[in-house]
Length: 65
Image (cartoon, rainbow, N blue to C red; front, side):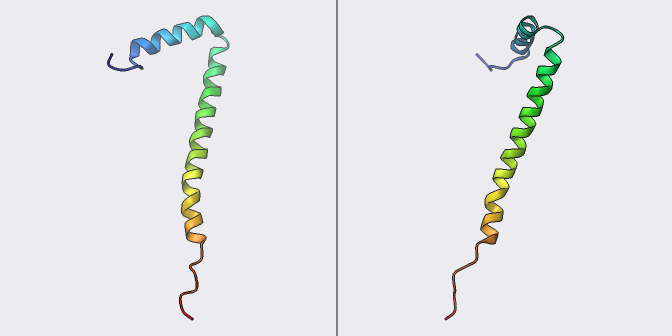
C-alpha cells in the first residue's frame, strides 16, 4: 500500500459523502471544514509565536552588584 490518500481513494470518499449528505449540503460542509482548518492553523501559528514573545519579555536576573 503506497499511500492512504491516493486520488482514487479521495474520489471514493467524495462519492460516499455526496450520497450521505446530498448535493445541497456538501458545499456547506466543505466551507465549514475549510474555516475550521484555517482557524486551527491560525491558532497553531499564534501558539508557536507566543513562546518567542515570552522569551523576549523575560528580564535577565541582576548581573552586577
